[in-house]
Length: 179
Image (cartoon, rainbow, N blue to C red; front, side, top):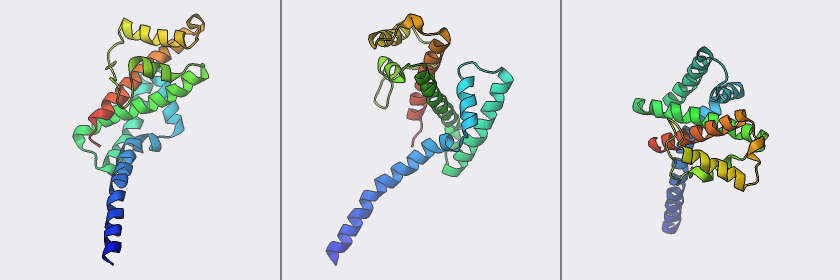
């Protein structure tokens, strides 16, 4: 009987970290999961310059409504709302841009590697502008992978830059969120 109780307690203890991770994942995923595909596509396009200021403001307000619902549902602190909104916007934009770059036969993974993005990466802050060195790292990564950079349309290069900026914000804001 005692062995059964100890085994049950041990099993319960091993489930706790998984449950906590699922709750953390739910917080990170909430806005992305609750945002409809049309809004996601509009936000992604807006982050590459589509639309005017008024239309972008309307999109940001719509995203803020979804974000506020997730903040309330998951008990996210008021002081984290700004970072949570920025993280969510960057995530949605980033995911949209990954698909858009793929349709142009460009891999986002080359940008991630060139700029060291990722959970354990340096994740440089690109919230202002990329340096010439950072741009050259990206271009060289594409050249090294066999992309004829002369044939890549300037609008696609802008999307590569938007992807890098969104990914920078995504990782840096994610690290600021304590869950």
